[in-house]
Every structure is written in structure tokens, then in C-alpha cells.
Length: 141
Image (cartoon, rainbow, N blue to C red; front, side, top):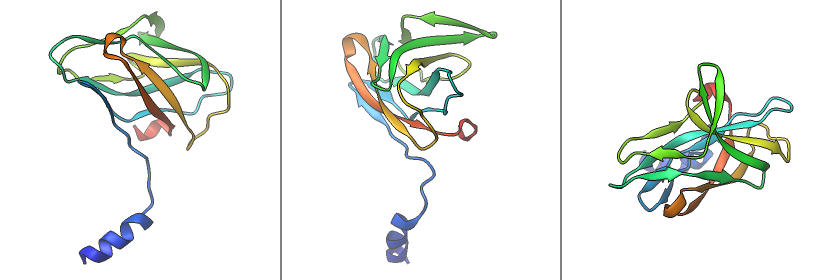
């Protein structure tokens, strides 16, 4: 039975390709975005955890897929732009629509469900980390 399961596993459909990344004490989970509406920016979401004892920050990001990546804060229907996100030790942070997340503007190519692109996360003194952003349906998260 175990042999049959092992042989069938590669044939099973894959719903989403999960990724996780590590930079020192900083762990980054599955990073995703939904396909943008025509002419809109792209919001990028996902979990980040500072596993260290000291403070850390996400100070920015960049991607070849867009001209600009900024940190957007959405509160009570208004958007604000911030320079960094504090990552408290041991406290998970989710980049999400209702709090801080990354916002790509002037996207250089059409992004649709199933596409992916690289994103370089800048954690200041901790260094940089390249992650893969998957374009997925928003309802699946």
C-alpha cells in the first residue's frame, strides 16, 4: 500500500506551490498576490517571523516585475505609506490587506493566476532575501 501511495504522489494534482525562506533568524512563509485589475497596482501578502532575540525590520523590497515597491498600510479605508515594518521577536506578522503589505506600481508585464515573479526583500542590517511571489486567487487565503 505504501508503495502505491509513493508512486501515485507525483500524479496527484497540486493546488498551490508553497514556499518558505530563511535569512538568519528571519523566517518568511508563502508569499502571494492576487491578479491585479487592469491598471491597478499589485498587493503582496504573506507571513514573516523574527525568530531572534533582537529587533528586526523589513525596510523595503524590489522586483524586476515592477518599477516600484512600497510598504502600504491600509487602515479604516485610507492608505498610508511607511518606510519600514518592525518585526518583534517571536511575534508573527502577516502582510495582509487590513495591515501592512507590499504594493507594486508600474507593473512591467501582465500578471495572471498561475504566474510568479521574484521579489527581493530588504531586512536592513540582517540582509536581503529573494522570494518567489505566486499569483493566486484571493479567495483561497
